[in-house]
Structure formats: structure tokens, C-alpha cells
Length: 300
Picture (cartoon, rainbow, N blue to C red):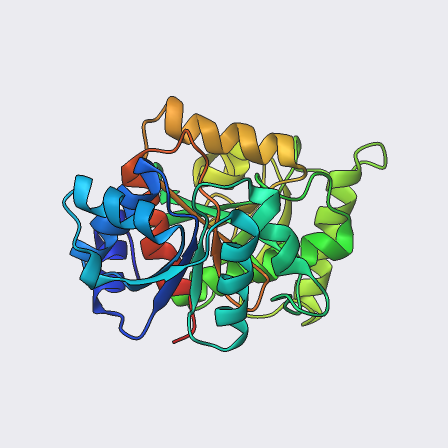
């Protein structure tokens, strides 16, 4: 079971057979991430874009062009189309967004006829070192789904659990988060939490233990849970937090970065292969760990 970010990178280094496709790696940040990941032997890379510019950037930052498969596909549309095609041909197992808008990448991936749609809703899973325990903590979804309904939350749970299975968590403890730990008709998040808990009990959500609703203190503190008489095994020991809406997920995720100064990694699951869509504000260190998480989430 992977417990920290160092172990995450080491596990990715030990993984073989993963190739990442990168459309438009034509900015300093993307190239630096690719070079760092290649030096740590996390993955091989196919770089799709304006070849002359990619080669120049690699040379400027100490990379060696011959270490990469560079395919000359100038322009975002052509670069993304080539990466999606390679994904459909199973010639790559992971996609890293380069210097282009996220929508320009995701729209072709989600194309019903020619894209890389999977069985599930796409959702973003963020992973940090748990400040309250010697293990990793997952959070979803603070990046893609604005106000997921019950069916979508079920798929968000399944995507997050799949990531934690790949991290060695055989039966991760999943907390369905809300503002309170009781069910109220006036608070839809608590109703969804109750139903997701029941789905898990009925075997409709497998490979994990689900409980909710849980307020933040009850999710992370066993003492707080026991003080309120909540004795479920998940209470106080949550390993994956499923947030009620994008606002809460995004705010808590950024609190990890900006208040706690934690390294974060995140990956989008639900397509036929993992997708990494780092923001421009992410540090190079976070991007490197996201690549490691993507490698471990990929099928080789």
C-alpha cells in the first residue's frame, strides 16, 4: 500500500510499459514536466505538435530530442487528433495536456464515435499525503463535475476507488461528505450520502466501504466520531472523500496546496485511459507527481 508521495514516485518508476501522449508540449512548463518524468523513468513519451518548436524547447531545458517520439502535427486540432488516434490504437496508455485549453483536449476525447469515452463519467481524483494518518487521502470531484446527481456520484466513487486499488488499497474507506452527519430533507447532499451508503451495503458499489453523510471533523477524527456516537468503521478514518459539489471539492483541494503546502497529484478517470489536465498554476513538483499517479492508474 502506497502511503506517501515518495512511494508513489518509486512505484511509478517500477512500472513498465506506459507511454504518455502529449499534445502541444510547446511551453516551458510542459516540457520541464516531461523531461523530469523521463529522467525519473516514469514513462515513455510521444510528443505531438510543432516538431521544430518541441526540439528547440527540449534543447533549451537540457532534454535530448532522441529520447522522445516527436510527431510533427502543427496546431492544437491536429495534435489532439493524433493523440486520440494513438490512444484508440492502444499505442499509449496515458494523456498529458500540453499548452492548449482543456476543452480543446476533452471534446475530442469525449467524442462518441471517434473519441476515448469509457463506461463511466469522467471525474477528477486528487491525492495528497493525509495530514491525519500515515496514508494517502483522495478527494473527488473538485475539477470537472459541477453538481453531480446520485447516479453521477456513484460513478465518481467508482473512479476514485479504481485509483486507490491501483495504489494498493484493497478496500478503501470512502466518506460521502456533507456539512452535517445527519440526514435532512432540506440538504440533498445528505440524502445522496444515505443512498450511496445503502448502495454499498447492497453490493451495488463494490471494492470499498462507503459511509455518509459525514462532516469533515467526523471524517478525519475518530475521537470526534466516537464523541457523537458514530461508530461506523469509515468514520474518523476516511481514505477517499466524495464531495457534494465542485465548490467544496475545489476549495478543500486548494486549501491543501495553499494553506497546508502539501504536494498534490490528480488524474481524470472514466475514459479509456487516464488523462492529466494540470492547471497553469500547478507547481512542477505537483505535475511530476500527477504523472506518477497517472502511470499507476494506466493499463499497460
